[in-house]
Image (cartoon, rainbow, N blue to C red; front, side, top):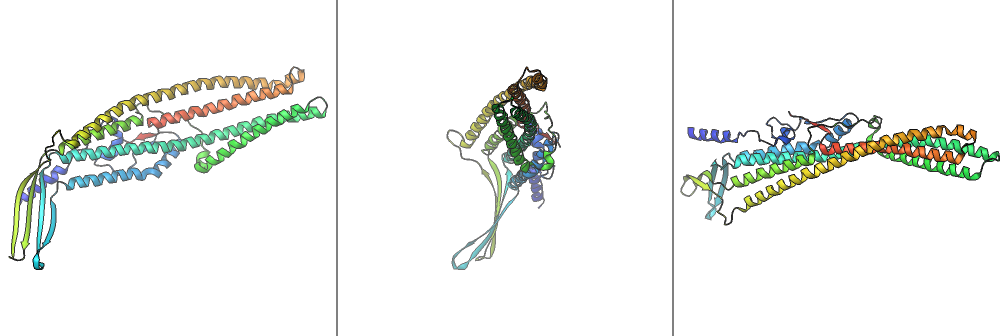
Length: 415
């Protein structure tokens, strides 16, 4: 019986597989998956942005965490199935003969040499789980980015409503002054109508901005909405997540090709059976070795060829993804740079328009300016102030998109 226990020990020892090696770009993402100490209860994603973004990101992670936990549980089941393939396969059975006679039997199958399939399958399962982990992160990233976009839209609309309300007060002063001049016989009704029209337009725009802000507030909640806007943080070493996913997909296809090749290797199997013949009253048994191998296919193994083609496609996809990610990143950075320059220019124009408008009262009393010119100055000041505000949030949203694509929302725990 000693040789049986030794055989079982060797089989169990063969199930102990080293941690799967992954591309260095995937190390941080793969650690919770391929590590023997990985646990679904561990948090490997930590927000790297300041509040309020970190609160929005954490809340979205809590909502979507089941997907990450399920990925780990699925991998554990795959590993169990793979280990079971090397353990003795016990199969009880029975067969019926004439006159109600029943034969009882049991068969045992033990793989002595699997041709390297176990290790290749273990690696393939791990790489598939890593790929799923990155896919889930990209999905989570997109959802978190939407939440942040809603927050930025809320803050923008609040600031726009406040700005327009202030401008409306200036126009109300002009309306009052124009009406006073009409009543005094020195003004015209057309001036009053012009200012009232502008006042109505501005108040309507302010109400629209307030309504949009209220709609966003219902999604965000008052606690988050009260927090001030913060700049985004960027990590110098982060790869865009589209590239990370393409690398993970390429690694998975490479492991699938290795598995397909291993599956064509012959396997050495020990088979035994034991039974009982009720007619003769005698037990039966038998033990033998068999070699199980895939049939020789003319033209090559189709499974291997298919896996090789999938790997070639994944490598091409990786190259194209790198080019596209670089192009998109440079495009957004160029836009941000251009908008920042425009923001500075607009700020200068805004200060000039403010100065001209506030000097209007002196010019009006001196008789060198009229109310229509005041309305024009006020409209210019409004446009410059609103443009500056809109530019601020266009820049923030482009930075948000850069942070999303680059995975800058997170600090990935390395265990």
